[in-house]
Image (cartoon, rainbow, N blue to C red):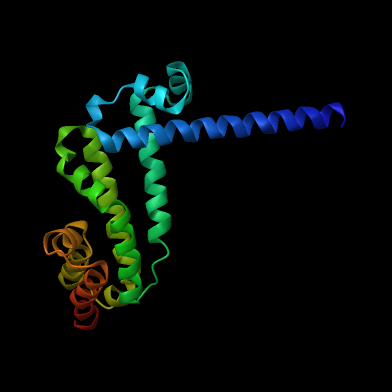
Amino acid sequence: MNTATKRSYAMGARAEAAAATGERILDAAEELFWSKPLDAISLDEVAGRAGVTVQTVIRRFGGKEGVIAAAAERARERVSAQRATAPVGDVPGAVAVLVDHYEAVGDQALRLLSDEDSSPELKDMVEQGRELHRQWCRRVFAPTLSGLSGVDHARREAQLVAACDVYTWKLLRRDAGLSRKQTELALTELIEPLTKGR
């Protein structure tokens, strides 16, 4: 192996190690975020859980706000990728993807919603989540919405957003105690009439 190849290999290994360190830090921040209030999370805890120094966290993310924002962005990208698998115009298929999402993180999302007024950072995260949800509904139900305009479009979009909301899942799955299969069926029965009627 020549010198240039060795140098290139070493640089690649360092980049991989740095990326892995960044992911460990974000994993630690996300785990802490879901286990305690935001204002109770310290950089010491994030660093300790990730197996790095506080200086490493600061160097990579600029402090607590930076690491929390980066962890939230990574989580949003993960949600967006999972939700993107929902087929357009196929209500049962879209509902299956939606329920997959809520089964994985619905309880966490509900906790975040209940705490949104406790800090500007949480409020911003929640609003970004709401916008992601609205965009998902617009994409998945585009065949229904495309034929509407004005107040009819706004009303139908709002109905679809509400029917697909995490609170609707909670009412069916947690409060009413429906099984996952029955929750999917109930959501499909709520949504399908909205996609047929004008």
